[in-house]
Image (tube, rainbow, N blue to C red; front, top):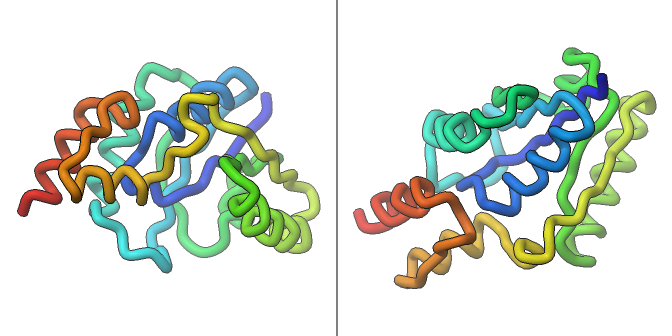
Length: 158
Protein backbone atom coordinates (compact mmCIF):
# COMPACT_ATOMS: atom_id res chain seq x y z
CA UNK A 1 0.00 0.00 0.00
CA UNK A 2 1.18 3.51 -0.77
CA UNK A 3 2.05 5.55 2.30
CA UNK A 4 1.33 9.24 1.76
CA UNK A 5 2.27 12.15 4.03
CA UNK A 6 0.20 15.32 3.69
CA UNK A 7 1.91 18.03 5.76
CA UNK A 8 0.45 21.40 6.64
CA UNK A 9 -0.50 23.77 9.42
CA UNK A 10 -4.25 23.34 8.75
CA UNK A 11 -5.11 26.61 10.52
CA UNK A 12 -7.98 25.80 10.15
CA UNK A 13 -8.70 22.72 8.07
CA UNK A 14 -10.80 23.67 5.04
CA UNK A 15 -12.99 21.72 2.65
CA UNK A 16 -10.12 22.06 0.17
CA UNK A 17 -7.82 20.17 2.55
CA UNK A 18 -10.52 17.57 3.13
CA UNK A 19 -11.00 17.18 -0.63
CA UNK A 20 -7.31 16.32 -1.04
CA UNK A 21 -7.35 14.00 1.96
CA UNK A 22 -10.39 12.08 0.69
CA UNK A 23 -8.90 11.71 -2.79
CA UNK A 24 -5.49 10.67 -1.46
CA UNK A 25 -7.19 8.09 0.78
CA UNK A 26 -8.31 6.33 -2.41
CA UNK A 27 -4.64 5.90 -3.34
CA UNK A 28 -3.12 4.76 -0.05
CA UNK A 29 -2.62 5.26 3.66
CA UNK A 30 -2.59 8.99 4.42
CA UNK A 31 -0.75 10.56 7.33
CA UNK A 32 -1.94 14.13 7.83
CA UNK A 33 1.09 15.72 9.47
CA UNK A 34 1.06 18.93 11.48
CA UNK A 35 4.44 20.39 12.49
CA UNK A 36 5.04 20.85 16.21
CA UNK A 37 6.80 24.13 15.41
CA UNK A 38 5.99 26.44 12.54
CA UNK A 39 7.32 29.68 11.09
CA UNK A 40 3.69 30.78 10.94
CA UNK A 41 1.78 32.21 13.90
CA UNK A 42 -1.34 30.03 13.89
CA UNK A 43 -4.69 31.26 15.13
CA UNK A 44 -5.57 27.86 16.60
CA UNK A 45 -3.39 25.94 19.02
CA UNK A 46 -1.78 22.70 17.90
CA UNK A 47 -4.29 20.76 20.02
CA UNK A 48 -7.25 22.60 18.46
CA UNK A 49 -5.99 21.98 14.93
CA UNK A 50 -5.41 18.30 15.65
CA UNK A 51 -8.90 17.96 17.12
CA UNK A 52 -10.47 19.61 14.04
CA UNK A 53 -8.51 17.27 11.78
CA UNK A 54 -9.44 14.17 13.83
CA UNK A 55 -13.11 15.16 13.85
CA UNK A 56 -13.23 15.78 10.11
CA UNK A 57 -11.22 12.75 8.95
CA UNK A 58 -12.64 10.03 11.18
CA UNK A 59 -14.79 8.71 8.32
CA UNK A 60 -11.62 7.61 6.51
CA UNK A 61 -10.27 4.36 7.97
CA UNK A 62 -6.90 4.81 6.27
CA UNK A 63 -6.21 8.38 7.43
CA UNK A 64 -4.12 9.10 10.52
CA UNK A 65 -3.55 12.55 12.00
CA UNK A 66 -0.35 13.31 13.86
CA UNK A 67 2.52 15.67 14.45
CA UNK A 68 6.13 15.80 13.43
CA UNK A 69 9.22 17.71 14.43
CA UNK A 70 12.00 18.77 12.10
CA UNK A 71 11.98 18.05 8.39
CA UNK A 72 8.90 16.46 6.86
CA UNK A 73 11.06 14.18 4.70
CA UNK A 74 12.60 12.71 7.85
CA UNK A 75 9.11 12.09 9.21
CA UNK A 76 8.13 10.49 5.88
CA UNK A 77 11.22 8.26 5.98
CA UNK A 78 10.36 7.23 9.56
CA UNK A 79 6.89 6.15 8.38
CA UNK A 80 8.22 4.41 5.28
CA UNK A 81 6.30 6.84 3.09
CA UNK A 82 7.15 7.16 -0.58
CA UNK A 83 4.86 10.13 -1.33
CA UNK A 84 4.59 13.68 -0.03
CA UNK A 85 1.25 15.20 -1.03
CA UNK A 86 1.01 18.91 -1.71
CA UNK A 87 -1.98 20.88 -2.93
CA UNK A 88 -1.54 23.42 -5.70
CA UNK A 89 -4.18 26.11 -6.26
CA UNK A 90 -2.41 28.64 -8.47
CA UNK A 91 0.87 29.38 -10.23
CA UNK A 92 2.06 31.24 -7.13
CA UNK A 93 1.70 28.01 -5.11
CA UNK A 94 3.65 26.10 -7.73
CA UNK A 95 6.73 28.30 -7.51
CA UNK A 96 7.01 27.83 -3.75
CA UNK A 97 6.10 24.16 -3.85
CA UNK A 98 8.63 23.47 -6.63
CA UNK A 99 11.45 24.78 -4.44
CA UNK A 100 10.29 22.64 -1.53
CA UNK A 101 9.91 19.56 -3.73
CA UNK A 102 13.40 19.96 -5.17
CA UNK A 103 14.94 20.36 -1.71
CA UNK A 104 13.01 17.35 -0.43
CA UNK A 105 14.23 15.34 -3.43
CA UNK A 106 17.80 16.34 -2.62
CA UNK A 107 17.36 15.26 1.01
CA UNK A 108 15.37 12.07 0.31
CA UNK A 109 15.46 11.02 -3.36
CA UNK A 110 13.35 7.93 -2.63
CA UNK A 111 10.35 10.12 -1.71
CA UNK A 112 8.30 11.67 -4.50
CA UNK A 113 6.35 14.90 -4.11
CA UNK A 114 2.94 14.58 -5.74
CA UNK A 115 1.00 17.74 -6.51
CA UNK A 116 -2.77 17.46 -6.45
CA UNK A 117 -5.18 20.12 -7.65
CA UNK A 118 -8.17 20.73 -5.40
CA UNK A 119 -11.64 20.25 -6.78
CA UNK A 120 -12.92 23.20 -8.78
CA UNK A 121 -15.13 24.39 -5.91
CA UNK A 122 -12.05 24.74 -3.70
CA UNK A 123 -9.46 26.01 -6.18
CA UNK A 124 -9.23 29.47 -4.59
CA UNK A 125 -9.56 28.41 -0.96
CA UNK A 126 -6.89 28.94 1.70
CA UNK A 127 -6.94 28.92 5.49
CA UNK A 128 -5.73 32.53 5.59
CA UNK A 129 -8.52 33.63 3.24
CA UNK A 130 -11.10 31.83 5.38
CA UNK A 131 -9.77 33.51 8.53
CA UNK A 132 -9.92 36.92 6.83
CA UNK A 133 -13.52 36.44 5.68
CA UNK A 134 -14.66 35.44 9.17
CA UNK A 135 -12.63 38.23 10.78
CA UNK A 136 -14.56 40.73 8.65
CA UNK A 137 -17.98 39.20 9.28
CA UNK A 138 -18.42 37.18 6.11
CA UNK A 139 -19.82 33.69 5.70
CA UNK A 140 -17.58 30.72 5.03
CA UNK A 141 -20.43 28.21 4.84
CA UNK A 142 -19.47 25.45 2.42
CA UNK A 143 -15.78 26.39 2.62
CA UNK A 144 -15.10 24.73 5.98
CA UNK A 145 -17.02 22.15 8.00
CA UNK A 146 -19.74 23.77 10.18
CA UNK A 147 -17.90 23.01 13.45
CA UNK A 148 -14.77 24.69 12.07
CA UNK A 149 -16.76 27.79 11.13
CA UNK A 150 -18.21 27.88 14.66
CA UNK A 151 -14.70 27.56 16.15
CA UNK A 152 -13.46 30.38 13.91
CA UNK A 153 -16.32 32.67 14.92
CA UNK A 154 -15.74 31.93 18.59
CA UNK A 155 -11.97 32.44 18.34
CA UNK A 156 -12.21 35.65 16.34
CA UNK A 157 -14.99 37.21 18.43
CA UNK A 158 -12.81 37.39 21.55
